Amino acid sequence: MFKKLFGKNEEVDKNLEIYAPMSGSYVNIEDIPDPVFAQKMMGEGFGIKPNDGTVVSPINGTVDNVFPTKHAIGLKSENGLELLVHIGLDTVQLNGEGFETLVESGDTVEVGTPILKFDVSYINENAKSIISPVIITNTDALESVNVNQLETLTKGETKVIDVTMQ
Image (tube, rainbow, N blue to C red; front, top):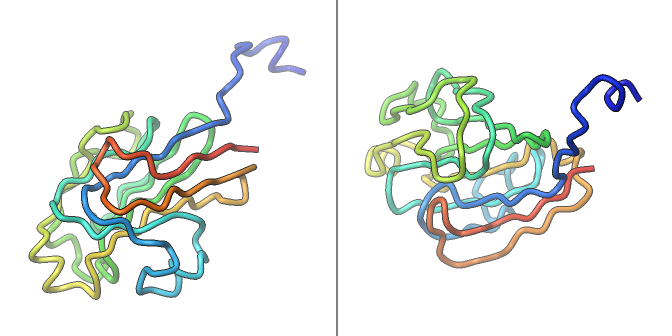
């Protein structure tokens, strides 16, 4: 009620499209070789086996969290969706080696905005896996989620998930 009286009378769109943050091969969430991601303990999503080291924003929104170890970035859309882009598996142990962040917490991003770079060979050699999870961390706030199972992903261009917030 107060929003109607005093706030902006703008309805936030509950629908959102999530695009591929990296180019590479699509990996089903259940096939990510890590039980935390594969069993959806952190939320719904998918994985990517990247073929280059540039990560772009998969949504329009703001950078919510840049992990100090640079291996993951949290993003938040205007309608409240929270998304984690995690590079490789067990990459937190690399302590930032092989990663270069291009954004800071609070930055506004659009689909396709470069947010991170990483050394593909270094991650391949030093991490458990280069497969990179893309996870909706507040899946409980969704009314519906549809993950399109594809083969090849192009960063910033291939739509992978359609979401409707509650």
